Image 1 (tube, one colour):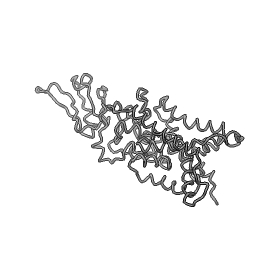
Image 2 (tube, rainbow, N blue to C red; image 1 turned 90 degrees about the vertical axis):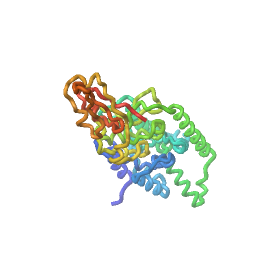
Image 3 (cartoon, one colour; image 1 turned 30 degrees about the vertical axis):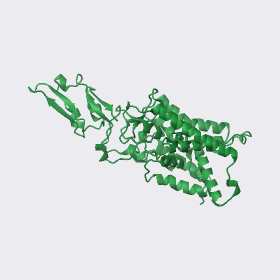
Image 4 (cartoon, one colour; image 1 turned 180 degrees about the vertical axis):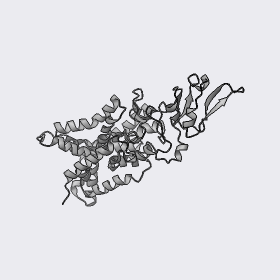
Amino acid sequence: MRLRSRQTRLVLTGVAALVSLPLGLGRLSGLYLWSSPLVLLDAVMARQRLGWLHLIAGAVLLIALFRHRWYCRWLCPAGALCDLVSKGRPPASRLAGLPRIGGLILAATVAAAILGAPLLSIIDPVNLFTAFFDVFRRQTSWLVFLKASGLILVLAASWAVPNIWCGKVCPLGSLQDSLSRVRRLFRKEKSAALSFSSGRRVLLGALLGVGVKLGLGRAAGKKTPSLLRPPGALEEEKLEGVCIRCGNCGRACPTGIVTPAVDTGNVAGLLTPAVEFNSGYCLPECVACGSVCPTGAIRKFSVEDKQRLVMGVARIETGLCLLTRHKECDQCLRYCDYKALRIVRDAGGLDARVEVIVDKCVGCGACVVICPAAAVEVEPVS
């Protein structure tokens, strides 16, 4: 039986939704995002280290070079939903007169990525689809719902004006259009030539991308870390530009400690991954967040690497510690996998305190979670 693109895309949309839900799937979390050529392009332009999963998007690019908008017809989950909400709606007569701004957005994305800030990939349709499922996490905020509204806005626009997103706005669709134009150029087809208006939009998009990068750099600047970041995260100012706020790291985290940053005082860092030890701590054997990050904002690392990846350093409030109040307790020492804590006693042996061995502490948070007196905090470090 011959496969049909519409039915295949609906099935794959279900698969994309399944791996985007916070179901504790580990390295499979957000796997569908790796199929997006736009995310791959941004990672390449920003000179981030590529992984073998990027080969998925590489294969999609190769096919799209010979099959116009192949990804849109067969794989795109956002496009499948747009078609569903547009089904049965009368075509908008004013659609033909609307300018195509997808090329402008694509040019802005590429220009910003070349300068090291693939931030505009936030509006990649696959990222919009994946990010929507953050609302199902146990800990959410109004900013997470705002991020999830991106897909809702796309669907609402497609319902009001059928095909407006896929035909006029989507940067991933414009990327595939550009690939088809490149193929026609090699075949010396006249239709491949750029019109004046499309060339102008590309130039404006590139200038917009440069402006985004400059504005982001000014907002970020050189700053002291105020948030705990996952192991392997880039330096603070780089992380804020490279991260596309997809939420993969948070969905993959088995203990749920990676959450979107919601500090409105730091606009450049909104919704980037932060660590909070409310539901658990960073397991020594876990490498999930680095494995699922598609842009390199969190670098891949091994279990052995975690001995050297410092998120922060534990600080003990001696006034709250049970041991300094002459009550027997050694919970933090027992649960520290890095042997970064020790008990120091005075000369008489009557008074004792817990001391942090800074050179060994990586800020995993186990001592924070286990302390019965809530006497431990982890402070971020560069």
